[in-house]
Length: 402
Ligand code: ACO
Image (tube, rainbow, N blue to C red; front, side, top):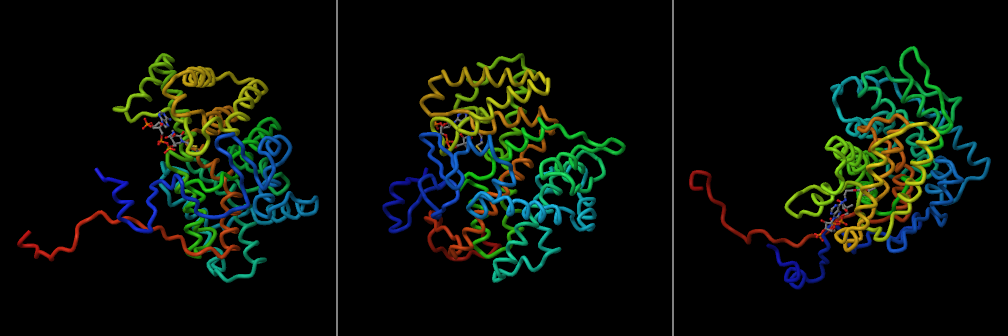
């Protein structure tokens, strides 16, 4: 085993902090997070208030430009989105090239980075701010189209074109769920539920995917390429893939007779790699404020839609049981945002495999805001150091003598 304290002592000025548990990578004025007190604010506004009163596009404006939009700014943003939500016809050719079982996160990441081919000017790191802003608005406008097309591809359906007469979230839902011969009927309960989920996911300071976006962008790679890297980082089950894993876990518990205690014991067993998905957070050590909002919301949305989901009951029992268990209390493990978001997304008809993809759509304004801030601050290229623990100098041995 590696003796970390010995290495620290020997490594001189290099700080070794694997997982960056105590290392700040930047100074940012976008999102405030207090993990002990369970506080989350975007640009100074409480997440609870934004989730209740704001729209996703307003929050996007707030994160990216620092202020809630005026009525005129909001109209301009909406207009720019509507103008840009159509994508180049050749994107359909790229989409057609994927095998039908391709995971939609891989499809989304590829389509995002492919934008550099359609808009090569985005590769120029020295463009004027107004030009960068066009790239930003294009991405905000087009990503929902890519997300919906990643879904229709996966579902074996033809892609639906955007409808500029609709709002951001309404248009997205229509592109997702319209099937040949049957126009999707927009339900305000569904629109509101999704809008809230997107707002709650919109930024979360220097998490794994956001740090990825910043570090890729720090090499002056284009916004499209940086966000594509963020999508890949979000894909993993310990980050954005957790919402998908939560539902799969809850379904398994249900199929297995609903014995919640058995799974809690499994999660506590150090010889078993199983973890309670949707539990624990690197920063929140008392509660995740987003999970609190979504727990209340899950009940409301399911009631309003008249959906009964046995998985919601299992989730509640699991939460209650775990929160009384010494193991979870000692380690301060609480449900995170993914624990309830999946239940709501399921109730509004979003397939499980699409959960992390929806998370990407929600996180997009945060990624853009963080990328923009990093560029405006003229931050240097991100380049962590290491502590070398490999072989010392040794002579080369020709292949016949090895
Ligand atoms: N189930 C069981 N035990 C857990 C869990 C869990 N979900 N999470 C953490 N632990 C235990 C660890 O085994 C460790 O125990 P030990 O001290 O006895 O070794 C202790 O709690 C601390 O855990 P770490 O893994 O060191 O905590 P870290 O901050 O590195 O990880 C993470 C946080 C990745 C979220 C972790 O809690 C986890 O794997 N959770 C499940 C996956 C999940 O829900 N991810 C979504 C994160 S939120 C988001 O991305 C939106």
